[in-house]
Image (cartoon, rainbow over all chains, first blue to last red; front, side, top):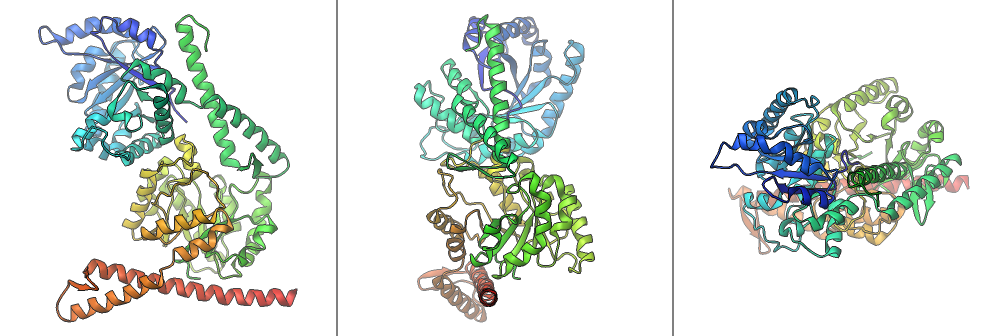
Length: 309
Length: 315
């Protein structure tokens, strides 16, 4: 089950004058802050002066806040962007475990300097190269800070020499997605991503298509998606969690199986299917997942001064 | 006997006479005596005590016998699972080499105590979690016990671990299943999985589904599959055996490649197709698999005949 309830991650630029309004109104579980290095001034000083306010603005709606960092310049960028209120970083362009270890060491020092709980900052990794996929296991095992893989499929396709237009009738990155999900899960983390073809088109599409795409992404094993449009967020928040129908089903599963166990049965029929130990375990995990998702929604509702839906 | 041939392995519940008493009549290559998920916690102890007599019951038709134990109860289960007549112990939810070594040590001691040639019983890790799937190579190389075949990386427990619903219409286990299959084959172990066959209904008793599964596995060169329902046995046993045409072709390829080799050639044509060392290797595999299947089928037929005669005498 998901380590984090992070169904929707919404990238916003700190230079965006509407950052606060967009973040607050998005209802995203997480905001990813992107920045541009200003060539006309000391970019590090510029970032340092703006990041605390940007983090505050991004978090107003109850979202976790991440900052996206280039792996090749991680030390300087981390020094300029890590302040209290950040949940973690998203590292992009990661070729191997060494980059994670170096970033983790930087975070150790920054946590100590800036009054952040030691070891609390998370490292998420945007996978956008063949090297990143190939070394995904060593990357995920490189630091206990590792939390999430995110397959940036548009960039990854280009790195692999593939068209990033959705011209194929089948999912071209099925194996890679499965690898990232499996590897992340193996270390207690998770992966986020969208199903094909939306993963490549990134379109602001209709609600029905979006909900189907989210369902398929969830069935693939993703626990959330990076949303290029605010319009994706509601479908992701509702789709990357057990639905009310699933929750009701699993409540019944637990009841039926408990009754069976009392009668010494290990396998109990329910609605034409057999309920046994793994099904009962799944039911309990799903109910916990639903409970945590509900709690997250309530947390965000409080931040908005509203009752939970 | 002939543990290599496991075209269809089916789980049976030792505590349920309806299943265990009829198993020998079903024609399976392997029966897996289950102490794990099909047994209620309150029934585990009774099930353990039934294993020894169940080995005899289930193998009367010539099937090999595996026993699936419980991950949390390895020490408690193995003394009830390791007996003459058992070909394999299945270790559920294996995630590390250490788990393999622990089970191996206990099995080795029990083999010595019970007159079983040491190392005879296979130890097969069941890969049912993401951690097991990524650690598969070290798991398979952890102990010196030979195993003929290995699969895993999918299934219900893996779905729970990955947080997904099963029975989608696409391959949800593309990486873990392939990783297990490739690691196995790299170590000279026959793979039992690796081919996705859609089954969105999730039903396990449809023989037409078994036929589709057998066709897909056969085409991929995979000879082994598991079953949860007797309706799968015949389609898998027949579908995973070489066809007469395949055996005939293999013989022709072997003869022609041998003739070419005698002439100092390595590539030739046969009935319009190019044949080379790879075709020759495939032909040898087909020939060997056909021989193994035939031996297993003769053994099963002979055992079944004896068991039927015995049943008639008792009846």
